[in-house]
Length: 553
Image (cartoon, rainbow, N blue to C red; front, side):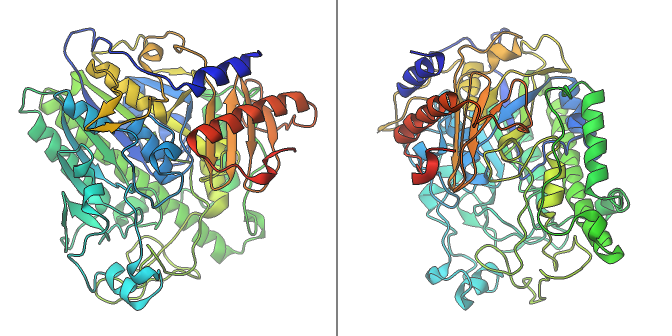
């Protein structure tokens, strides 16, 4: 049996997790997980970006950055995998808008059963969401979405809300898309929040609630787990004017210039090796920068400026959370994880519907089409595919794809009281969001059970990252698998087999070609067959869709 075949046999059984000691100090750490939404791989300053992120950069300088960390390429699947340590297909979230099942337990549920306080601020997106009367563009649904009717109506089944899945407290939206100034589906616990203050901005509200939670939980003897799930910088592009002003002229030279500058900084800072990370041609739909007229260039650069402003505001919030941990005496014994749910988004919806409002609460129309000054509540902007590809420098593609631009996330871990040997270092050890569950359990000195609250749960698929934090090798080589809406991939033994929806398999030697520029499928048909067999075996085991055209290339 070849190496890949042996790995398949091991992982077909699932991986269990035994109890481990907690922090070497003997004191169980607090755990804070900060998740950003639709963030480009190179958006953060510490990953080569020009956006001001001094507080996140500080986390990186005092912790470790991963250069090969993976997500599930889309909002719901990543959140499901992060919280359960399982592939999203195993817990009902192979597609967006479905309900997290009880085939797995959440980090919050297991840590709470081991004496942790638990809280969540931000986007849930793990409950089934459905339009009123089944019509996403019907008048009843728009009245609900536009805050004009049914304000007390639950946004999903209450027994699927975060407070029913292990969180003592939760504030944030249940659905996935929001008006940042007046969000739909906002709840506190199980209660709808029918109105917000005039100066409300969701990112700031998530920060404020996180700070409140930290201050409250810091007064108790038990450690705490806090999950901060930002909506930003997911579209619509909404930001405060003072944040937008900082970036008004930053992107006037276009996406090619931004991409070249980010790539150069990534190389200069030792984040990537240009021999392993050659820069592919920029991808995207529609006219390229040189074909745009002055007005269209101004509009496009303004869209990217608002995206940057949204990331900037998150960073300000991270600074506030760090300060609250410091002033409560919790900072040194708090493990902080920061990552993203997928790559930057190419999406540009031109009309309202389902989760996209048609008017504000007051009845002002929302503009989707044409040129406009993005940022306020009355506009619904997107960065689009070319900015998205540039934001994912040096990778190809974007959100929802199993290529690196869709599923490769920044990942930072800071834990001063822990085993990180060289603060400010990077690691190229491979990790995945399924690894958060076993990592948190090891930090807490807790074991992963076979059953939870009367439900038999699946064996955890991830493996703890604590060994990597110690500077050691990963515990065991393992393949990683991807499938979303027909896009699919497997990474094993330094190679990646990947395909777009309805497309042929492509083969890349990631250890030599990390940006997927040289397709070797035609030259290595035997490796393609072996890796496809591995993917097919996994897909059968977890219930992933197996398109009829997945054979061949």
